[in-house]
Length: 224
Image 1 (cartoon, rainbow, N blue to C red):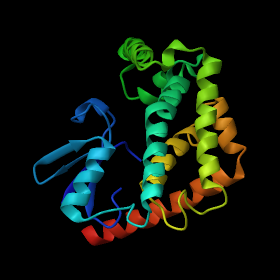
Image 2 (image 1 turned 45 degrees about the vertical axis):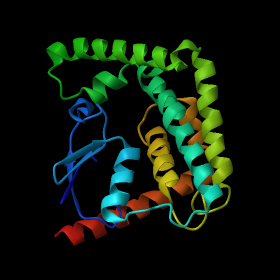
Image 3 (image 1 turned 135 degrees about the horizontal axis):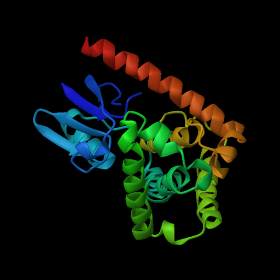
């Protein structure tokens, strides 16, 4: 049985046990999600999907053409390597959201040390943003990059049910993960405004959420 370590509230068609954790440093790459399967521990979504393809034959991109797979790859890299960091900036560096880490991310940390932990984590995030490169820009410039990334997703989606047609692919899982983290939490930013002001993206998120819920029920039933 695969053990999926992820944030507290998927693997479509494959039985798994979900283990909610809040500390990403517990993962082999210092990130969440990661999986454990028959002694194999893997972090990073790309490596997880490659393993599931080899071990279980799972291929969410089977229906894509060679060109669509290339486009999907480029879109995923855009979202994971830039929009992700814009989201990080909005949660940690934007002065409008200074209380987010303390009141949400570290709400279970005892109050006497919560402030210290928050300051240390904020310093680490600031350094990571600087080393990544995004943190060298102004806030307006950073948000403009993120808005461009969201508009790229909107353009690819157009009026289709999913990014590459009538069936979801890995790119949809990546896009959903990013967009729901922008639209869902009460963290004000130009990113959140754009998503909420775009009906096609809101409908897309609702469609993906229903699909995720359905697949989660099916995998739990298979595991029972």
